[in-house]
Image 1 (tube, helix red, strand yellow):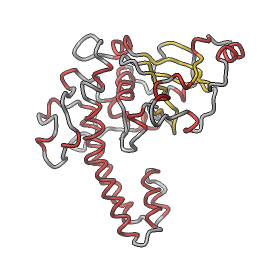
Image 2: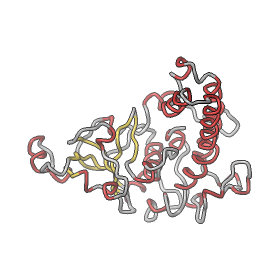
Image 3: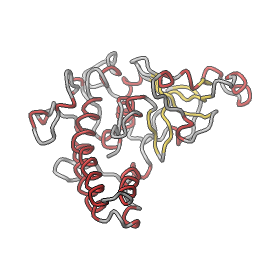
Length: 292
């Protein structure tokens, strides 16, 4: 399940956002617990994502059967492959694999759709980024009137921004101490160094209408938000900031987040969706068919 599915789902209207929604009351097998019990109210991108979660569960069944075959695990998601390799060393490998599979199904049946994607589609979550945007269905231009993606060079606290600006002929206003970003003041701050990126580093920083300021960190072949919501739970495949980025990218039919202002940054620091996924991915509909 990737941000590309939300990208192709199009903008989300205000009347599709949830108010008082408790994700822990959601049960995938009990329809009335779904906040979108009336099917037509559900955002199209969420339909794609949920259907892809179902497809993921089906595709991973073979991995549990052949968990001791490295050639099979070579094509498995890295997180799952690590869990399955760890299960081999347990006193009862089959039981350990069963627990891995059970937890994985809980991710894709309950946590990702119920506690993650529906959670960020609340008025108090994604809604906080579009409060001032005009119209019932804000498009990319309206979203970017109140939210920005700024090209910056992040430096450590021991580095003088003016020195970096002079060395590289840059405007010093776009040289920022990483410790000034919103995530740096949280209980579990995530730094670029945690992702193997050394400072100073050119990167894209999101400045949002809610008042927060988070860097979008190159990871693998795409980007991940540094906000605590995204970083503190491994089942959270998307945060409200990434949702906004996906809608902006989808409106422009691009895999790159547009640069609102600031310095030029490498394409890797703006490639929100993997180039491979952008070319080949076809999101699943509820019926299991590809979308147009």
